[in-house]
Image 1 (cartoon, helix red, strand yellow):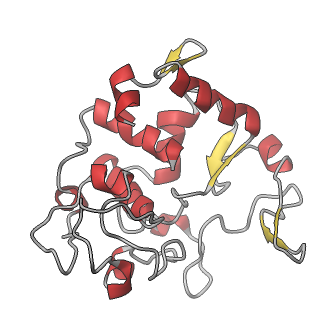
Image 2 (cartoon, helix red, strand yellow; image 1 turned 90 degrees about the horizontal axis):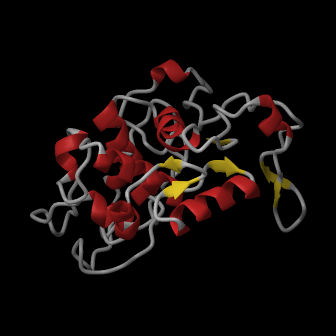
Length: 227
């Protein structure tokens, strides 16, 4: 989420996004809390977990060819007690929506956009959901195990995953089916970044040094303060 937010702020600095604009205007479809339909939802609210969304309807398993808006049609996706902007409630689903806004504003697939905005400028060995990582990075994949020591994620054995996203219902993994803003969950902007500790430390140094690291100015000090 932190690295996704860096990408958002780069687009804000470029004038392609506005933290306080109604994201519906960018998405091309109306994003509103059913109980509070007159309250716009903005990137600032999504980034700060104040958009009155919850994870109760799911957030990451929208398949290729699906639409994240389908999740929001479920009443459980919304905090019925609080209007947007009035309450903090941590919700992973905020970030697939943010990724959808980023895609629509740029016309670029989220993982490739983040590669351009953050990963390449900082020379990081990182990627979202393995799609753009090189072979050396794949070889260093760390397996996530459950409590019974069974592999849950990234048991790759040095091989690229057959499908880096949730495949379509028929098992199809043709990424040419991607359409900007339909499904920002595909490359897991809420937690799909694969990055090693040294590069994560580079992100930390970037923030400590007000947006500049190793001679690269990624963000202005003002943007870092906003974050």
